[in-house]
Image (tube, rainbow, N blue to C red; front, side, top):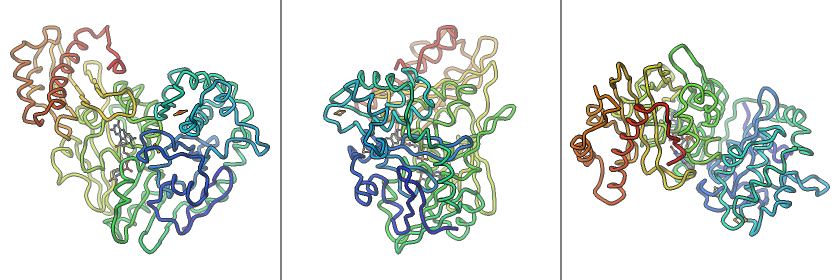
Length: 481
Ligand SMILES: Cc1cc2nc3c(=O)[nH]c(=O)nc-3n(C[C@H](O)[C@H](O)[C@H](O)COP(=O)(O)OP(=O)(O)OC[C@H]3O[C@@H](n4cnc5c(N)ncnc54)[C@H](O)[C@@H]3O)c2cc1C
Ligand code: FES
Ligand code: FES
């Protein structure tokens, strides 16, 4: 056990013993380290000006991710290498290849977004290990970096210009840095106590359950993308338990008919497996927040919140996913549908969500999700919808339909499910039925203009789902919305 948060800052060891766990990495960098290159734009994860690189130990060295420093608690640095814009240029002042490419391609004007952009491209370059990224990857990696004066064309050009990946001190010294990190961090469990806080982080579920046994009211934190604001307002002596690096919660396991995703697996890490098993879920996750959010956010965090409105909830719900929860003395499994409907069955004091079991779809099952939002990235949905149906002999059976965004919750619309049961998708719904469906949604929504828009979307997206089943050979891209 250790009483310090140990990490490397731009390759230099740091050990923090007195910091409050609700301090953001951004405040720590700017106010304690006086490293002001990392900018503060919105403080809520919505602009990317504060982007830094966070590298964790992996089997083959270090795995770099772009994260927003403004909503990352400083405690989450434990065991990691933090790279900021000040750490990019060489000691002799030579610009890092990413910085040089931005300069060559005229990718900066006022410069406020530039450190964040450079850090996002630095992480992309590391993930690609010097191999060229395609435009889609570059656009995804910059999805959380808002630039309001230069524009994105020069930044795309800069990303192409660094493709040779040469002269990167972090790549050249990767194994030495990984060794240094291992030696410096040592203990896998830390307990940090101040007058106001007790902070615990561990790599083992047993440690987390032991802590919950003696301290059931402890607040869990995983990616921190949904909770850092509320933790900052905590009164009295609070205990925070970080579960982001618990090995048992970071597993992805595939069985014959299900896939199990650990509650602490970041969204980005689920994508390769969902691309194979549930492509619509993967497409939806690629539109969740931005790369920085997906690098930290988790399913445990989406389901652990008081309001289940995350983009993934409707999809998991219609797929028939189960939530598995552990307490120090028990394990229970509950269908997400029931979990959503019955607050008493949600994550209780002293419990932790450990994994989510998602059924695989068979050849006669269809699963679709559609998200409509004001922008493609970094926008909460106007409406997220999810549809599941078994289609046999040209007719729909066992339909499950859920929407998030109608009334601040995720709801299954039974009237919609009944309307399509037994239906042949190519015939579609009669106008009368559609009118009835539109009326049936009124009970879920307040009567204002945006709500009326969401209601009309709900019916139109159902029509789209039917059209997609009827014309399976002409898929419509989710990104088109
Ligand atoms: C800029 C930005 C954009 C975003 N955009 C979207 C979006 O487009 N769509 C969307 O759906 N979401 C979005 N989010 C919200 C957020 O990223 C997701 O809800 C994410 O799934 C939260 O996961 P987390 O691990 O970060 O949760 P945390 O913040 O760590 O935790 C959230 C809550 O869940 C609890 N919790 C976490 N893990 C567990 C567990 N294993 N067991 C029990 N309780 C647990 C915590 O105690 C806390 O109450 C956005 C967030 C930001 C900052
Ligand atoms: S300051 Fe805007 S994302 Fe952090
Ligand atoms: S250079 Fe000014 S906001 Fe991007």
